[in-house]
Image 1 (cartoon, rainbow, N blue to C red):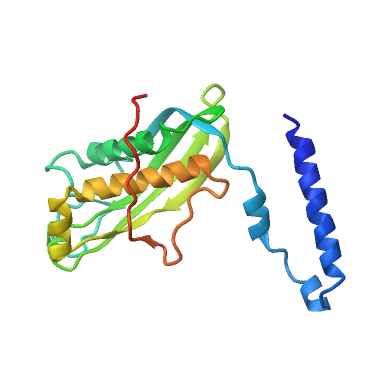
Image 2 (cartoon, rainbow, N blue to C red):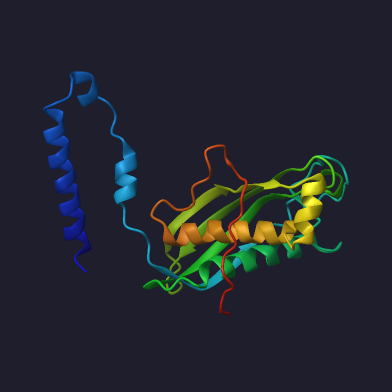
Length: 221
């Protein structure tokens, strides 16, 4: 596929443009640090297909069932009936990986690994009053399914999402936009971006995603 030659050509073109530009700028600009934005944009997008996945929700994470505005704990989840929160959070991530990654038809099969570090959604008290932020943090690694070699990552991802409150939460829930639905769709988008974009997933400027764009239903793995 001549990737090394293509990369070398791109670097040569970039160097040539940089040298020609230096002739028309002042000394301060010539000595400024390199802007990495253009380099990142020029990087090729990965061509992955989902061969498998593994989700780890460590039992060392603390679960809180306290119905307060901001309870302590690493896992706060009310989107399922009372039960094993580790299993429920793990199942949600698994569904998000399938939703985000299964439709991709890239040339390289990969395995997606996720280890959850924090999954702090809204309690009943918060959801039906002021609303807040679904605080979600995890590490994502993409591996070769045959060798186990790391292809991308591990990358620590902070994927916070606005959580509706009060009448807005009730109206959203009536339309099927539950906490579980919105968070699953949001995480699916994060996974898809990590698997398909050169930059991977990029958080919004303020660090919190407000609007969820639904992804299509996926074929089973």
